Amino acid sequence: MIKVAIGTEQYQFVRALEWLDKAIDDGIIPQDEEILVQAGSTKYKPRNKTIKMSTIVPYQQQMDEFKEARVCIIHAGIGNVLDMVDLNRVPIVIPRDPLRKEHIDAHQLEFCEVAKDELHLPVVYTYNEFVAALQNYNPTQTFPTFKQQLVEYLVGVVEGVR
Image (tube, rainbow, N blue to C red):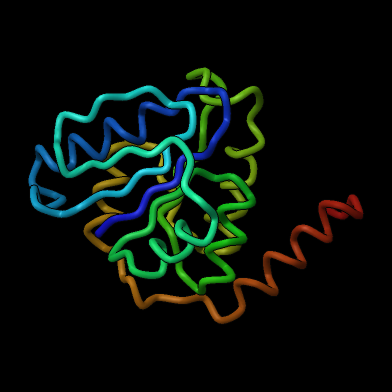
């Protein structure tokens, strides 16, 4: 099972869902693999019937689904990232892009520069990077120092050091 959370923002994030459909069509994701998506306000009708869309998923259910998932995929919202830290799961991260009207500003893109370079998270910006991340995904991979690195980074941002 693949678990996807693309946020509950009012802005559409269709690109991430199109990539899932295309990855199934291209044989990257098995056609019979269940994909559970918390889509918020994003309006999208999947071509593949294994993609199950939910507007909102209760928090504990969402965490349980992430724990059970073979692959975790999230948008770059800090809440989702911190949830993944708590679960000790390394997600594939897709930042929302304001130029595509997926968010109001570029804070997710800015965070992902750090997440990719300093925290070594698999951040993807293109479909080809998404495919590579899926193919190289290791569900047992963890970052033992990730939580401390993230806390130090966020403290630095708050204190104006970064």
